[in-house]
Length: 162
Image 1 (cartoon, helix red, strand yellow):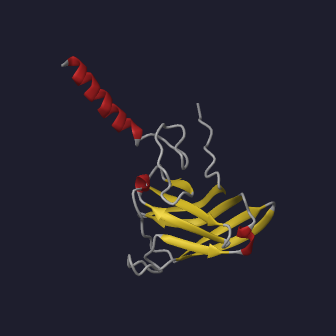
Image 2: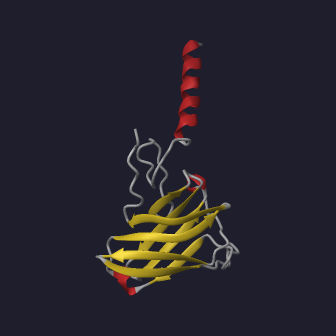
Image 3: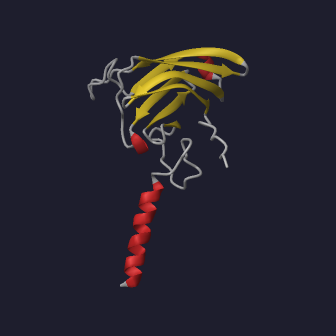
């Protein structure tokens, strides 16, 4: 009986610690748990798992797609913005992208009520890596601005302060 109780407590402790930890990027590398981006892209954590963004590059088409996802990447999260503005630096050269909301008849999504955004640019066809600043996004009642990351690496974790 004591062994069963100990195992039960360990399981509860593991579940309680797993998703409440401080985590800094797509892979949540330091915390020990990990969420796979559903589209195989680069995931960015917003507000310690309040939501996620996933960026997927289709180099052949020169298209960048951003999916807005619920906490723990558990599904799509619609937002009211019609566009997302990105400032990119590619091999030292500044570029801009305006990702527009994608309408989807199957889900009823439309501009101003969408979870998917896309932009197309010729430089995306050859860029393997670039630094990005997302100007502003509002998700689940919270604004995030000047969000910086590298594609495809994701957010560089902040050093642990002692």
